[in-house]
Length: 179
Image 1: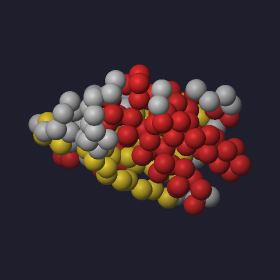
Image 2: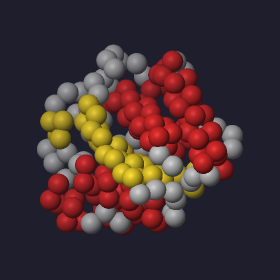
Image 3: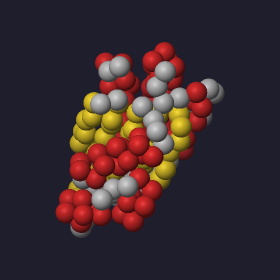
Image 4: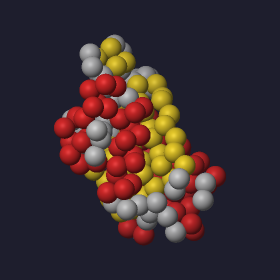
């Protein structure tokens, strides 16, 4: 994604419809399979939780979510080991997986989803965090787990929205193929 669209205009366009369709698919899958979801978000700042709760009936599968933006909240709210953060960095596959495992356990859900990343602004490397546009999504569904790294280009808002969409797609695929 490239460009300088504002977040509001992105949400009113095609991308928003794509996200809504993914949430509708997720809702149907979780309802059919009797699964619950818990979410830990960092760079998306609650956007995934917001999209899920915008759909009527989301409370039938969505237990809740937390925004753990700073390293301290990652270990206080979802139980990430501070040593993991110091060894691998707050934006890493290891931390993201611990976030997914932690939120799943703390909210007693069948599915744990976590997202970390560097939204930017602009291209470049951010010390202690990594390359702008780098995103990690971790999922734990039952006894299966996966962590994926993505890279998106665009404004800060575009990167965050792309992370939401990619995370929801991965979640739908994993739930569909899992349980």
